[in-house]
Amino acid sequence: MSPSPTALFCLGLCLGHVPAQTELLPKPSLQALPSSLVPLEKPVTLRCQGPPGVDLYRLEKLSSSRYQDQAVLFIPAMKRSLAGRYRCSYQNGSLWSLPSDQLELVATGVFAKPSLSAQPGPAVSSGGDVTLQCQTRYGFDQFALYKEGDPAPYKNPERWYRASFPIITVTAAHSGTYRCYSFSSRDPYLWSAPSDPLELMVTEFSEATTELTVSFTNKVFTTETSRSITASPKESGSPAGPARQYYTKGNLVRICLGAVILILLAGFLAEDWHSRRKRLRHRLRAVQRPLPPLPQTRKSHGDQDGGRPDVHRRGLCS
Image (cartoon, rainbow, N blue to C red; front, top):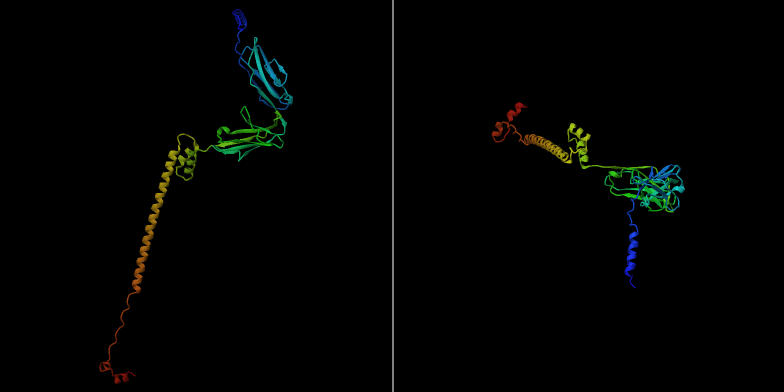
């Protein structure tokens, strides 16, 4: 059976008296000072911040029935039982705000510290790759890497006993101090002590700086130019183009000087060879010159008479 018009009218009157739903108040913010990573027995302050004129704040720890109607919670000494998740909200009149984002309060120093190392090393050039390895002697399955100055950690449940945090294509922004922690997934808010700090250094080399260094080594520039460039190698007034141009001109000058010296040496050698050959030719001519003819003796009268010896002359001579 369809409802009668009278029933529908009464229902409309009843709905008209129900107050309209108003918009929820914006959520507050919750922060831990000085940090949400708190060593055991160290103080920490939780602060809930909403708009001005709030009537009531409520700060509570999740997974428990504990709460307080205050904006600030001061913990003079951190305990294991105080680690966990917190949130807060506020009330204005009869309206409650949305709850804040959850804050994870972690107690550190519960276990011994792990070790942190960099592979291949803590010094890496810009654009390269580096891997930070966190290792512990306990059978933990959770690891967290913190960079000094960053609000949130890098968590990596990779392996038991150790975890690797690869950083691909590093930049100058990755330079800084790193620490790592180890903990168990069964107690996610009870962490080890932090590892010893690891300083990651990212070096940047530009093409202009490299070419200026090569030019200075090869003594292409003058002393004054080299000093000015070395004092400010990253300034925009010393680009790579002029450095390459000066370097090329210097090479051309050296090549031309070397060619001239080679030509002069070749000329001297040719002249010396020609003079030696000329002197050798004169010597050969002197050696091959024909001997002078022997002097001819005068013929005696005996020879003129048919070859008979001159008996008288031979007797006189004897």
